[in-house]
Length: 126
Ligand SMILES: [Zn+2]
Image (tube, rainbow, N blue to C red; front, side, top):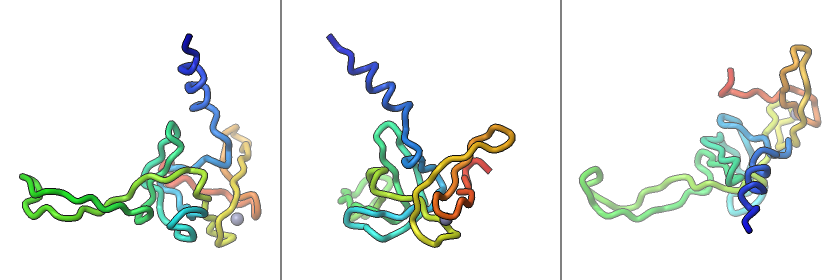
């Protein structure tokens, strides 16, 4: 008997508001080896609950010389980190904050900073 498929599907759909991080957001890392650093979100995987952030969690991959890369050597790239390890950076408060949501008069939902109530811009949607 396998019910895990249904369970995992519903889990993907219910993302707590505090986890709402979108591509293009500026976030601050609050745990792990890059704690305290901030950067721009390059990609978000809600399924895995991970985000890839510019210049955060750099991993080095040793590559052998091939057709594209004749020299080979060390390739540096960003590895995804847990969404729960980052917080949205509020430009108004100038620090990482919790995010709430608000329904506008036109029924659209926006993200707001829980401290100063300022709108958190979504660069990718604009
Ligand atoms: Zn704020």
